[in-house]
Image (cartoon, rainbow, N blue to C red; front, side):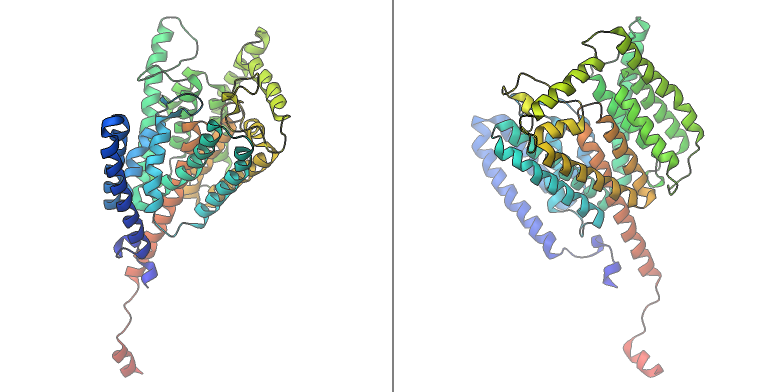
Length: 452
């Protein structure tokens, strides 16, 4: 019967005690480091002080830091330079992943373990290119990719398994909607001035149209999926979805629109979904497809060899030239930051980027990772898995026409998958606890003997 009792009702186990002891030791080491750096590098001292505070809060409530960090995961402001520049979202993800790993609810579900193992296989495959091509950006990106997949999964799991799945999804949707509102406002001002070019949001910092478009498209997918456990009703779904879709249209991000259409089609056609969705919406998507088609045709007919369509074709050809240098193991992660090749661009396609960076070996491991993630999401209870499937499909489709290993776009789908896995695990534990409370109490031994 003890297996039916949720972990939060039990005393701390040996693993939890060891994890908390490790956190205490880490906190002491960080405090000592702060004292040493306070004079020489005050910025680093401030960052480490915040980390110490986070460790203390995490020891009290393991799911608090991952939940609080979720909105920051969408901040793409760059920090650093020289090929090892990262975004604030990367630092926030790393800060949340450490406590999520040490104090995560266990045992991990089979689905989470499967994706973590697939991520480890991908990291092992790309480790070959890191060894063959020793330079700083290569090592940093190797760790960065692992954090974007495994770290994001653990952060999402910590949120969902601690019972904060609804809050976590709502925070992500709210942050995406805020970005959508900024985009719509700036786009409306531009349109009023007669400027119908794509919108690049400039507040509170400059953002690329494809970043804003893909993030808002992901939000639109999440709102349309709106699983019951998130608690977004039909009216709010319509309002939020309209704002998010309008923002995508203002950015004119074609890959975002294509990913959005693909995710909606999957949700509508999935027969075992948690809720039946009208297929009429497929007819409403026709103008979106027509809009994207017209944008592409205009650029092709324009004949400008430097527009986005012809530029991508040129980049694909140049990428094959780079790949031919080392077909099996690749030329290194973030090779475009080096001066070994005459090209300085990140391939705008997920498979081509992995192929040039990690070769055929890395591409095979990447395919395994994506197939395992999609399979786990598909086999999850549809009440939780439909959302994860839709977001993953949207991102994979977007990644066929844009940068894939990019901070926010790469981490958010795996955060959502982790939240869905954790929320399903938490709901199952709650059901087991409820069933245990409803079972009749076992008779005392002496009573049973007397009846016999």
